[in-house]
Image 1 (cartoon, rainbow, N blue to C red):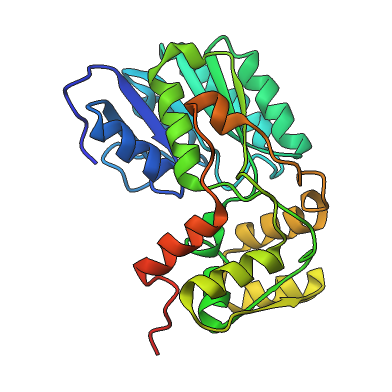
Image 2: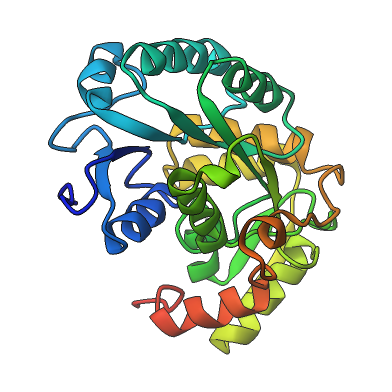
Length: 281
């Protein structure tokens, strides 16, 4: 996505081709803001694992959307976030919007690092993404007609990635959001089994939920050739975080945007209409 010259301030969107980053970048560009995509394949490459790419990507940047890959919960994330925010300050960056996760002790440590960085900050702390069923590791299962997951009876208030992006874009462009922690969820909690049932209803075909043990879940992800770091993260989430601690809904979308969050049923209907859940064979 080219840098737009309408607004001379540059926003660096790390994870700029991911679920939330791509949406944040599109929203900013559509409203005339200058966007720099932070990804390995961007014109100015950015790679979390190659710190030599950070300074060129941060040059001339005013604000950063910090979406650490693969997740703030992975070992070593706090050290990387601390080093990156230090470099951002040195580069003259003024503000940062951190994508964080609910109930993750490691994410809380990273949030504190951002608070202490000297940058104006906004924290966007999110529940499990609805889009993991359509743009993530669960898509092959949905297409196959059987979603096998552990903890299927634990309620989770799935958040829509568009809501995350709208909050993040607002925080990147409006200083009124500085110093705010927005905890983002959907308007209701439903179990993974309930979520699969709503997807099945939306697509009009049978998709069953299959409860499995963690070991079976990991084995299935490996069979689908899901990357090892994603498998490790999902195993951690289902084994530790998705235990009911995050079942309550929160008011972050309402506080940030003045409206209610999108519902999972609406997500299922709109996604079904795209055909992404329609098997090709």
